[in-house]
Length: 263
Image 1 (cartoon, rainbow, N blue to C red):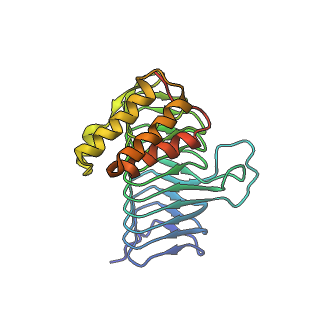
Image 2: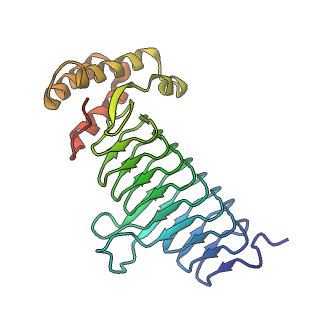
Image 3: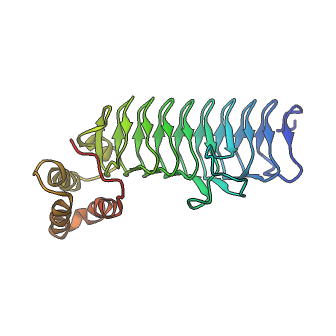
């Protein structure tokens, strides 16, 4: 039995692995590449210059690789790259990039993207993230590995969300959220460290303790960002067992351009 439903339309230029399943009435464009083991449900459209890896599952009515919703877009051949083992639920939209940025929108590996999520042009989504129902990303947003974002949350363009963060539902994000932080609100307010998530991922008590100290330096000691950053670097030298985790925080603070959320 063919894995391509007879009502599906596969453009002649598309590169589709032999074991890819394509459901009824789905359309695959001519510049699309889809890797082995991927399932495309019914009524999906995958077009644009889009490359999709292995073992992904796109549920019904997804729109993947559409042109960016940017009035400056003039038809440039920008692209979308999707990794392996992602679950993409109903009515998700993911757009290609723009030449005003790197020209590529990216979704990494093993992400769980729930219904009605919108991932706009030039977003860079890491690995192992959970994006709950109706999360809305404007353009140019960066999301770190293992981030969890609650339903109906919205992100301003160019915002960066650090690794291992956990954002409560219906949050409004206008500035960068450092790694490991948990919180919620409109506007978003930090409430502590995502300790339970870190424990589940195998972080030791000693490393979690050091991460909590970076949070206190950043949010509880009344320090300016530059002052907190200096003390975080000192802590890193004092806690070699947590050096790599603290480096995530150091790199994030040094690269932040919109400023980080504050209480």
